[in-house]
Image 1 (cartoon, one colour):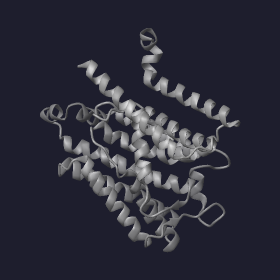
Image 2 (image 1 turned 45 degrees about the vertical axis):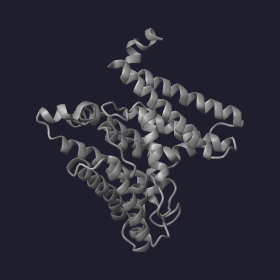
Image 3 (image 1 turned 135 degrees about the horizontal axis):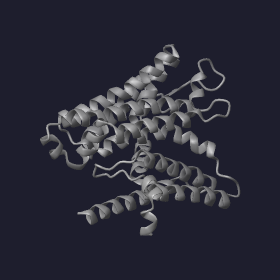
Image 4 (image 1 turned 90 degrees about the vertical axis):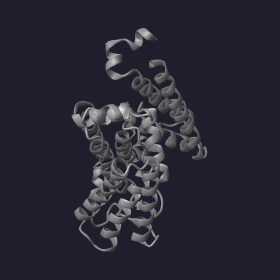
Length: 320
C-alpha cells in the first residue's frame, strides 16, 4: 500500500481522492445491479448542480477552521426573495437573478464581519444567520413559499443554466467554478492565507498579515456561492419552501469532510468536496431506487462523516 501511495501519479492526484472516486464508481454499480436498472444519473446531477456550489463555498470557510451552518437557509432565502420579486412583483428575470446572488453575498459579508471583526464564534454567527435567513424568507413570501417559472412558462430560459437540449450545462458551470476555486485556494495569496489561518492563525497574525480580512473573505466566497446555488436550485427544482434549507448545509459540510477538508482547518480539497457531493447525491438516489426510506441516507452519511473526522484526527496525531 505504501508503494502505491508513493507512486508519482498517486501523489499528484491524491490517494484519498482516488479512494473516493473508486467508492463512487462502486456505489454506481452496486445500486444499478441491486435495483435492476442503471442508476438515474440525471436525478443525481439535479442535486449536484446546486449542492456543489454550497460545498465549494463552505470549503473555504472550513479551511480557516470555521463553520457555516447557514448556507442552506441562505440559499433558500436568496431564492425566495428573488423569486418573489420575479413572480409576484414582475421584476425582470436578470434583475431577480442578480438580487438572488446579492442576497447570498450579503449574508456572506455579514458572517465574515461577525466572525473576523466582531470575534463571534463561527458556530454562533452561522446559527444566527440561519435564523435570520429563515425569517427573511418567511416575511418575503408571507410564509407561502414561491415557485420560479417552470418549463414552457414565460421567463423560463434561466432553466437552460441547468440543462439545455440534453446538455448538462449546470455541471459544466459547476466544474468551471470548481477549477477557479481550486486555483484561488491553491495558487493565490488569498488561498494561502486562508489555509495558513486554519493551520496557525497566531503565527500568520504575528507575521504582519491582517488575518481578519482574509478570514472574512472566506465567508464572502461562501455567501456568494450560496446565492449562485439558489439560481441552480431554481433551475432544477423551481419550488422554494419558506423556512427550509437546513438539510442542504449539512450535506455540503459532510461532502467537504468526506473529500478531505479538515474540520480543524488548514487542509482543504475542492476536488474532494465535489466528489463528496456526488457520493451523497448517489446515496440519495440509490436508496430511493432500492425503495428504502430516504432516512437511511442521513444515517449512512452521518456514519461516513464520523469516520472521516476520526481518520483526520488520527492522521494529525501521527504527524505530531
